[in-house]
Image (cartoon, rainbow, N blue to C red; front, side, top):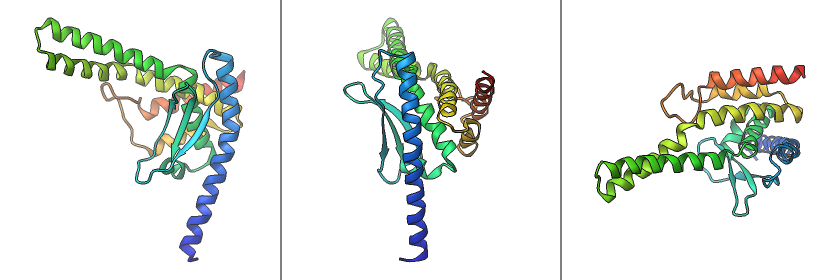
Length: 210
């Protein structure tokens, strides 16, 4: 084995141990908060790794067909974090989306947007194809209308989950300093990185004094 191969293997083993350790500490904290604040939800989290190659760094929360919450991290994101605090914060953030019911809220927002845009198109006398296009565009606009607020809500609760698991969310939020800043883009899906870092710091400070 060449020195380069040995170094790659050692880094992969380190990243694996770190991911398993963080998941084992965040998962029970997230499940306990879910059962406390959203008892009607399925709180049995499944944390998985998306090992498809060639993807940009990403983590996301979704549900399986039985409503079980899934938190997925791809290999690029696992490799991009600089410490366990960053990984824990991202994991806490994604877990918070489920607890706060954001997937359902986005679906509702999309449905309202679709109804409004398609209705306006029909009132203007548009043909069926144009109405369908308006409906699709309206759903997209609706889904993004409150997405920034949802991200900040998840940052806030994610900060608390991260602290409860014994990690430093302020250090973890430094992850935002290395990713592109969406700024104040109209109907962008994410708030500016500075806003996210600020809410993490405020929440951490308030939680530490309680």
